[in-house]
Length: 509
Image (cartoon, rainbow, N blue to C red; front, top):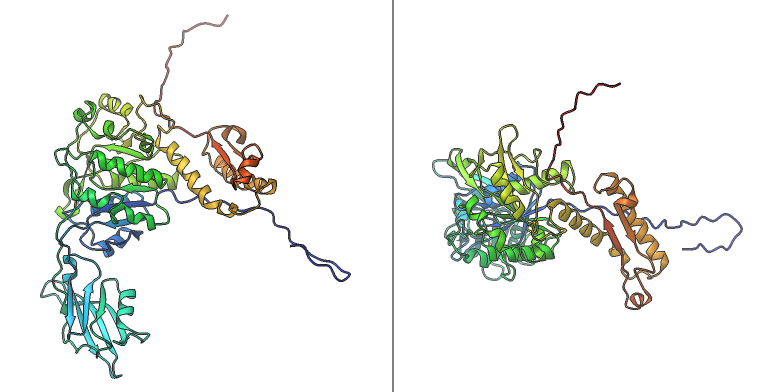
């Protein structure tokens, strides 16, 4: 603001530069949906390591592909993932009622809660007690203390009210007081086990083409109130994985969800899909490529052979989505979102091979139909050998044919969407347009310097336009400012042609 001058002297006035630095958003935060033996069912939970997932959701379980896929994500370079646990009918939380005045329950449904117990000890101060949570391993191993809450009260008006403290601080249980301000429960000499926990129906996707969509799909799809709907409360996710899900109708719906959230769906093929079924148009690609939403999905074939830790590391067959999400994250961190998550650098970690080896001719048949193949090469191991979206079928001729082009556009869209909120309610005239050009231009110039665009000069690589040509007086009257941003995307060198010629042995004269 201009200073008020009222005495002879020197005045200092700070003038805003108009610079508002635009920071690019994260590009490889994954979301995984599936059944797990434990964990929250009413929210998407962020985990940042395999140990985080193990503590919160129970690790691997032979009844579900979710745990395996999350493990494969982190093993291949992933760093952040949201977990959405989907459970079926009959899932019950284990609980125990102490002295008829306090019920302690596992904080999520499932049999897992039955492996914990509660111990109560009243303190010397009247009305105060200690509540401890124990892990109860199989006998004769002793119980292990995992949590302890001190100086608790049964009085709802107390700052140490047991229900509030336990519900907000425990990683394992919740507490419910029975009655109005009752006395604390009696001491327990040994931990009282939680009982009644049940896994009920284990919801898992159909893994073969002969199995139709069912309860799992119903629970996963938008509109169910659970499943992917829980991602509505997540600030940002970029990749969606539903391990083993290959139902065409379900994948088409998930494509639309990803399109609306500027994310990519990593779609698995059926477990028993073969080159023949895909080549003869019997597989999912032809059935789910219709519409603009297909640009936000990529389809991978075949399933991966990898050691199964639950079976003494004997070979098991797993869907590719977890591996691929990790490859996306690793490529983004080492090369950038504009680099295709494929090629000799995109080698899968912790694998034995693929369930169905492919040769060059078979790969060449599937690639033009937007099937991204995973191949075994003697020198490079198991690598991703395709980088097309589900609009990458040559017959479609889409501008979003390649995964890195689509993901680059999503990255720019999301970054600008978040960074330009300051523009709202600013005076819509030349000073505002100039600030927009300055800040968006600086963001695009930084990407150009990192090698994210084609072109030798900024003029060849991108443009930012915001002036009286993009925003007319009628737009101003309607409260609209229009910003045009264009970029020349880098496209992967999908086909390398080497021309060899024999030189004639001419003699100079």
